[in-house]
Length: 401
Image (cartoon, rainbow, N blue to C red; front, side, top):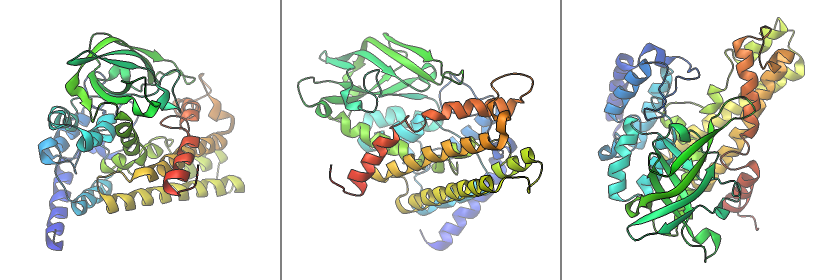
């Protein structure tokens, strides 16, 4: 697109955003306000749905997707301009969840035309919430050892087994699921990728209460779940390829940027005040902040900015595609960053950072303590740090096994 057309696009985009982005959608999101699709879990902020509706009508919940699938078909240059303008007004993401970040991009690449038409426009509108059926009680980091079995019944599969750590399964409308379809071949070669409704007979979920007292995860059970053959994504017994590609979309973090969410979860885990201001608050003054802590706070902020700039550069280079095995670098760095940031806020607060309950702690201190405990899992969830380092060594650096 020529430069004058790009400038016109920027001006039109700025004018539209200024007129249509609600005031509360330009402020930092608080827990409970997020919109991840579907209708089983609603945002506590009604303006979030005004924002979602307006953005979905423009195709800007998934701006680089084709128009026929609910997107806006933006070019790379237009996409970057849209990101700039959204970030200029601190606009929050209109839509999150696994639909836009994981299964949607995967269906664009591997889905049949019928699957794309059925699911992608609904994802773009925020009509559906999705969950991920990957890990099992005996197959976590060694995911290819999964045993949930889909038996061929002619025109459908009958699925039996269980999945664990299925985030938001109790609120999801659909699941994308890795299942075994052949037990007589090497484990990576006998896996298929299925889609099915969470309202299907035989599907049940049980929330798992974590150390922080919350239950973002579930165990999911499948008892003779009937899945039509047309819900197979890709080829039979070749689901491992599809499943790996989906993980690259998840680990890239590019979906957060596509929603104008500058640093994804790294931004949302921040306390009410920036860490530097928080340190001064608890220390009483800037001079009261211990020098080593001050240096660590600065290093942490530099890492965040470097991470964001790297993600932004990746978006500008490849637009809507995930950058292959290098996404493991994003996953590894982000996991360490989040844990480090929460350790720093604990050091800043001292004993006030260990509040589980009680009148001597305010709501934010209690919330951040529980988040600190929850975040211990982030270097395991979605593929452990050790798995990411192996991928980086083999697939990025080309080191021998």
